[in-house]
Image (cartoon, rainbow, N blue to C red):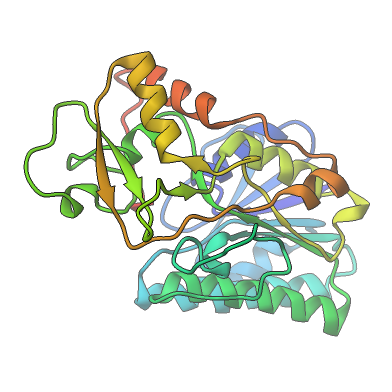
Length: 315
């Protein structure tokens, strides 16, 4: 296998390279940041540049497409549409090519912005919310699907919710300026917040919010399986924890194990349950992380002086 990884310098990309290093030839398409890993070839250029993509795709048998943008309208179409288009064009024209794996997101099916009264399966229609990021995830999935239909391209989409690593989850629950991602808890409450407090997020109906997550190691294992598993051909899979994180459970666990207070935070969002049964049935994949493990590892993680917390984008 000769594997091209886009977005290889990001959270998932680095973990994937570490997981697969020594098992196959790995090439990384790098743009703003470099990947200094022994045995991994780097090609530098913009994913929106067809010549750079052609160089990166030369002789490649498999692609894992991780490169993405958040709410950056000036860049997102170049990455999500043009970049993916060039990758798919090179893949379909290459006699050596075998499989394309796209890492999608639950933003393509509305995340927690819209009400989902039943578990969200892979048959849920695309429902982008306001902004350009969710739209980009819809466009990616549709483009991949159409290449499957028009050209018979061997491909798979792994649809992931918010991806956690190390102490990410702890900082996602911060009321301070070091908060990772959203909602912006401090802006949603009045008055002072007790020291060390965590948000007990409430959904639009006033009940504890349930939100979907996946740990990076579980996602990486799903990618490793999907690269060659015959049942992954032409399929989309939800890759997530067995149950969504319940913010009431989070508050209760942190109160009992670490004595942390919780503050109720009303939000306009809706509880959702992303269903991962298809991936478990067809791929034999199972997540190892549940809510308590996600919490405990995030709070137990100790950073060394040479391991600063760097957030490349807020979420």
